[in-house]
Image (tube, helix red, strand yellow):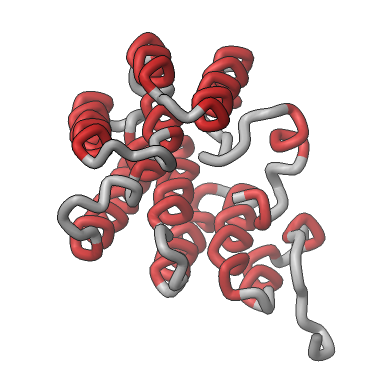
Length: 210
């Protein structure tokens, strides 16, 4: 690691958080670090950093980077509805442009976060993904749809979980539903898509937990 570079936790970036976040060396951690830096700035100063974080997330070449971009938009939306909607719109445009027909496993995380803005649209997209997974008789991957549906309709999420044939996937889906039920409304607005347990909430300020 070169001198002055940061490899991880942006909590150290108290005085100049965005400057430190930009120096994070791991590419997939840079966007979360910027978003978490924005969380610690006054709103007017944070707006530009949230936008920068979103643009940085688009550079990530992960298979489904909508998980990161949607959470950045969600965190911004929690503080400023207009800003959050702007970022969600950009993230949704990016998701729509990159998704392929029948690829029901991509984008579920986006609809989880977008449920706070438009639950009806999120439900529609997740039901489409669920139907596609059933047509393919999928053994794996359906749990992510259930996880996303918890933010829309817990009863429907339970129904979906009951349909999963793979025992490990079913257990994971039901475990996530139980964990979601234990979260406060404030915690539900801030959690990542992947982990909802107490340990994850404690470590939520670390970019590797996105």
